Length: 327
Image (cartoon, rainbow, N blue to C red; front, side, top):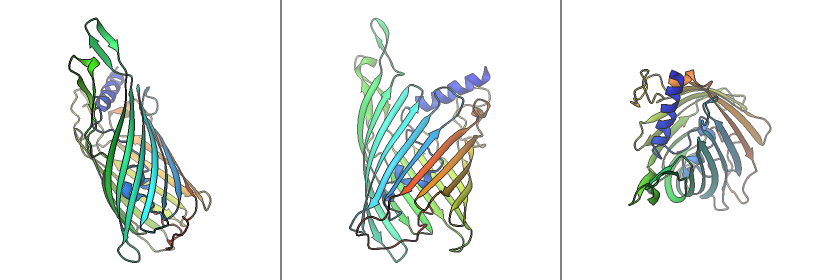
């Protein structure tokens, strides 16, 4: 009974926040940064097609299922790059689809370092069947279906050894209202600003074992700050193995009182693996072991990554190291 109580309140917290933390949360964010920062478009200097699928909280009915598929490439002008991304997110009776189109202008600061500035236009489709409208004759089912345009911006300083990024993917604070909820129309949900910051560095010699720590900070209105910390090893320029920690977690305490305290234990620990299956194809897997109260109700979360090198864009004049995508 306690497990069901914890589950209901945990899911309620996610949905009650409406759009307080609406962006997809991925454990292998470092392998597809385009979903949070438009300035990363073309950062590998190649045409790159990739996808990540996530099944969160296995064993819990209605638990989140998410996925992103992206394509990015530099253009003939070496300073320009574009990217496109489709994302899907389902939580219970909510099923949402988003489309992002990104443009990046890259400035070469020296032989190895570039600063990229990016803009993103997005279209988000909200489909929520949880809603009920209160009318004079009682309560009536009233699903919500809306299309929400938005735009965002980001900056990305990077080389083949390090990166520092910051972005705001939603600049417009759009509201979702429906007159069925009362006589004047009530705000059913709202798009809140999200702020993302990321950083990473590769230690080690060119032909030896490399160590790559990364950090990803997520800030959103009406939500506590969350940070992902990861430590990865690169072996033989082909295999990544790593461990991570995600803060946050408990939305209610052990007594069942809603509190959303930061959670000293954290939300989860993460084990991940990625390999170059061929010279053009890389695959990866991540497993999240829960640390919060939900660990009594779920065996954890799973994530699968696939990336494909489609070759260098035509007329790209500069050459990058073969394994430039350390990140």
